[in-house]
Length: 170
Image (cartoon, rainbow, N blue to C red; front, side, top):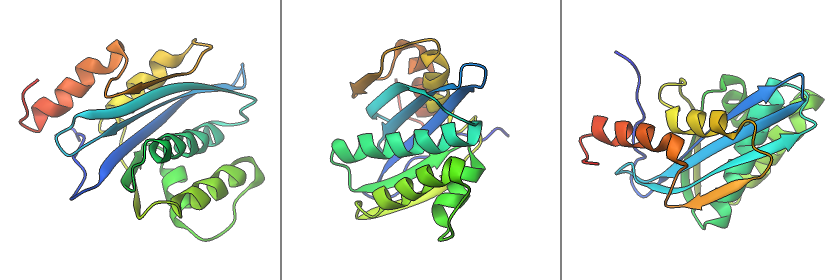
């Protein structure tokens, strides 16, 4: 059985993030989505980042920027999910990291202290489908886009699939 997106517990919202990295351009595009326990979209965004050194840096930066958006929207109880095991594991550890992603990991940890509750969890790409779709659709955009209670059209089918699998109507 394929894995699927699972709703957050209790009063939490779930923030899924992902990045597409283009090493030849040294750029990345991040996608993120914030959903409630009914799978309804509360916010989403796509953002282009320049001077990105590695895929690991791209994923860690995506986590930072998704956290910043969640904070700006006023959410205090969040579950962070991403398909970068490295980013998730390092965000949970106390140790310092390599310079290329260490600065982003330290920023994740700093931002995490601003929330009343935060939990980091690794999921595969299938369970991270909306964020993955948004990130992929971001390339080759040059402008950042953010939405409240919406996602880009390209991700709507994935949102509806997630809700349908949970037993919610479209």
